[in-house]
Image (tube, rainbow, N blue to C red; front, side, top):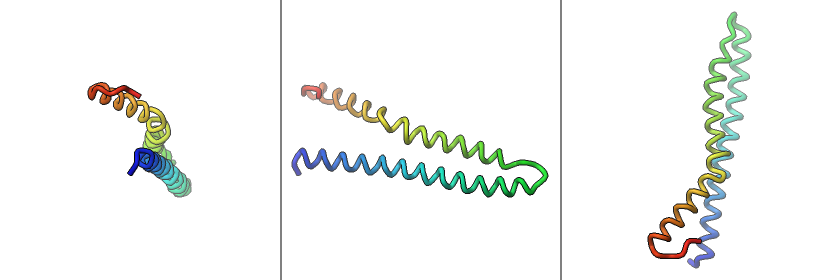
Length: 97
């Protein structure tokens, strides 16, 4: 496999992984909304409003999931990979790119 083919394959793999992570978050958010709507309906039929507690707890988890998918993996990962690549090339005696 030539360098260009390897680079294209790596780019495709990373793009698919990122798209999969984003799709996973969208599915997580959809399930969150659906389940919490059902819980709110059930909670409205009881004397106390309890549905806010699972919504808040799960909402924190959903927010963390979103931060990881949309913030941390966007540019931070790429910058860390580039920094590590330059460090390894310097150790090998190559020129950093």
